Image (cartoon, rainbow, N blue to C red; front, side):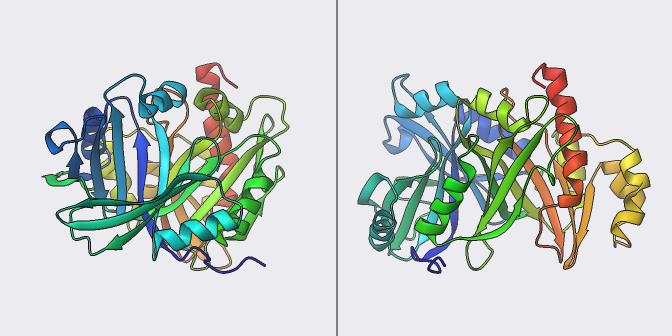
Length: 364
């Protein structure tokens, strides 16, 4: 039985993407997803190696970072993986104690505890490695009252396209065949997470491809990390395609929570976000499968939203197409009406929609 919260995690502090052009990525997240920029670090603030834009909507914070030199580790990460998640950073009570506990439990060190400081105070930072080239920073505050982290200045660039996104609901990692249980055990041993739910290839499959997944969660269910691996199928699964183009394991998608998915999806569609399409026949069977819901069925059908019910309630969800050129990173928009699940009843419809996209790319 894992010890509950041995690293004293408080929350996801932010998610950092390494990208090819942070200025353009920040513009995209403002205009398409409705994030506002609130902090900045770059040449004007004394940083010489890279530039970063801090974006926020609700409590979801994304950090977009680009290197200036081609031999910089940030640039090398982008060259290998394309734009992708480098750091899922945690706010912790004490970065030194969290780092020591993680190493004692078998984590690999990326950065020893050290101070980040400026005129606003100090943040203590350490980092450990997880799957692929992904890391977890561990951040604790020591009287810091600045806009984001030391070295950043407040720079507000608001958006008029806020989509009503509240926070990160979960983040999904794709790993190689045979490594899912290894990383599930790592999150249990190192972070004290528990196996919240699991799915096998009977749950998540079509006639052509399949995957397996274990959802790891902290004891408060506020931080949830599903971990996927491919399963044997007649053709290449979405996980295999991701691993091929990302050049290894990494974060496949980020699920963003809303309390009004019809409004959120309407705004995002108007902003130019492209979503996966499901057949109209999906909605003919929906009333029988999920029963009565609060939302108007014609609205759900028009917006292409998926619905699933379990013993606790129901959820509504919709998945974007990849938001980068490689078929790797995408987003999920999710609204929970009691359900704490992940839309098991939608897996086949979702997989078939993804396979149609794969076939267009010549990768199925």
